Length: 191
Image (cartoon, rainbow, N blue to C red; front, top):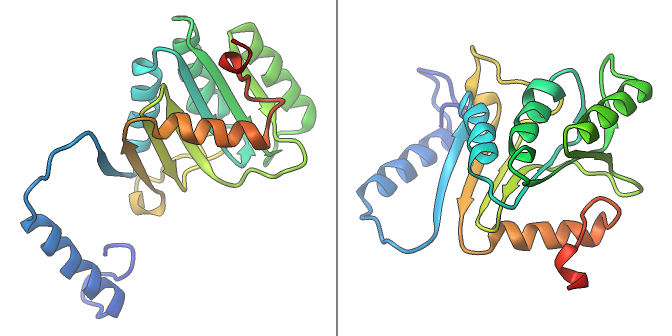
């Protein structure tokens, strides 16, 4: 609602969203193993740290562009997880902004030295931005953790959804492995 209409401006979409918000607030929690939460503004950074800290077996990040925020936004968090023997992979499509291919190669070498697999999507562009860890946590967002950052004055510019559901990250991971087999190692497929 805040994205659709500024204060004092009447807008049909904002009005409908306000009604939906009120309806949802009246709903009683239904329980169960599934949870969905919005990720707004600086909560993206918290979510990256959370994934890095909670991951026990796998942490996977996908973004469109590789830029100047790669190191603080993704690599450092990935390194923390890799230190605990978590399989960490970051997939991107193209270097962005001032980053050139040589810089991307240097980041890939740095990442590899720290236990993180950073690789470029081959023929199929990856535009989606996501973070998945272990089997049950998946974040789908508009924030490109490897080339963007949250704007403090406009936190609603980037929105995401954190889904916690049995097997949701595993399903997403396996589907991505079909498109990017050179990046995602199907360890258990050989077992």
